Image (cartoon, rainbow, N blue to C red; front, side):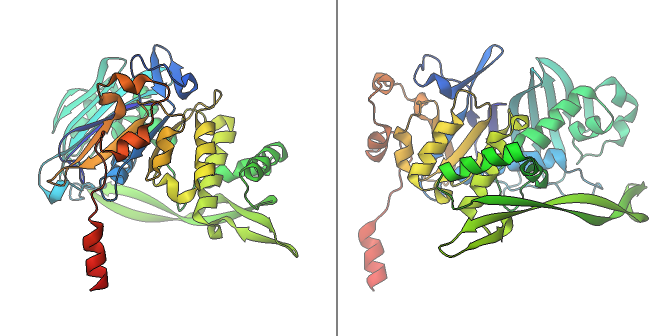
Amino acid sequence: MLIDFQVANFRSFKNENDFSMEKGKNVRKYKNNVLEIGNIQLLKTAVLFGGNANGKTNLINALATLRFLVLQPTFSESQKLSSDTFGYNKDNTKFKVSFIKDEKRFDYTLEYNELEIVQEILIVDEEVIIERQKQQFTILPKQLHSLKTNIRKNQNVLFFAQSNNVELAKIAYSWFLEDLIVVDTQQVPNILFKALSKPSFKKKFLKFLRAADFNIIDVEVRERKETHPNIQIEFGEGIPILQTNPESLMSTIYDVYCTHQSEDNKYQIHFNNESSGTKVFIFLALYILHNENASKVLLIDEFDRSFHIELAQALLDVFTNEKQTNQFILTTHELSLMDYNLRQDQIWFAEKNEYGETELFSIYDFDDDGLRRSDFGYKKRYLEGRFGGTQIINKSVLLEIAEG
């Protein structure tokens, strides 16, 4: 579960910005919106509002980039790290993420530029497991002491450590791999569809879809095998050499076909050809309904684009249901969601200043006793400019140019 995320010098985030999923002190509304894990209380849902091009999506992209850097190793010292700095400057990008996995708290810091990793720190339950300043490795697990000369300047130690069977590194790596999920309908983990082969789960899944007024009366899962070339990477003097093994690898693919009911007959549509809203809803349903998918962090960009307001509100109720143990981070333009059963610590804003720098803040950051009233309307105050984050639009100039 995500506790906190900090980002600096990434896209529109020039200065360090802090995004927290910790419960705000003395906020007592909507207790179902909070998860208790040991001695820490975390929010189940956070919603990020803001005008167009103010940097909402960049928060999702920042988490996705950190995930990519952890999971995808470089193959040589000449390979550049994925970097997208503010205004394409040459300063370092810095990420820090805190999360809970297997009842342990992990704090992971990664500072880097496209050529090298400048700083990397992994702390588990307040004990430093990995500490690195460029190529100076101050603290390493015992398994890596004799291998530190093999760690390249553009290679993260976390990946290297889990590859060498360091247990705590394996747990941290698995959080990035399995628990941090970007809801991208072009990259649905195919194994999710396997659950629909079970009649009991399929029945519950279809009932869930019908309750949301989707015109899907059945789903069919077709299993097929797919062969891939068995490519092995061997390193010779630091240069990766690709070698193809004559024995191909076989993987199982699950194709899903949704059956729709028209006025005259029934017809099937492959999942890939469904609308983006239907695909997002199916993606979420598979995570929400399958017990094995608990304690995930699901990142959903442009939540309002996929669902009309009634369904969006219903999903917020599902996300904060008492039995729901996943976390959901949403970006949206739909201002009416501010007043739909959300606490002030769940409502975040992205706003660019006059220099094009995004700043993140939540309503909880405002010192206003009125915010604690149960009848407080956040949307009205937002439109009045009380929280910032509003888009300044000169309608008359737009019309003048359009008419000219």
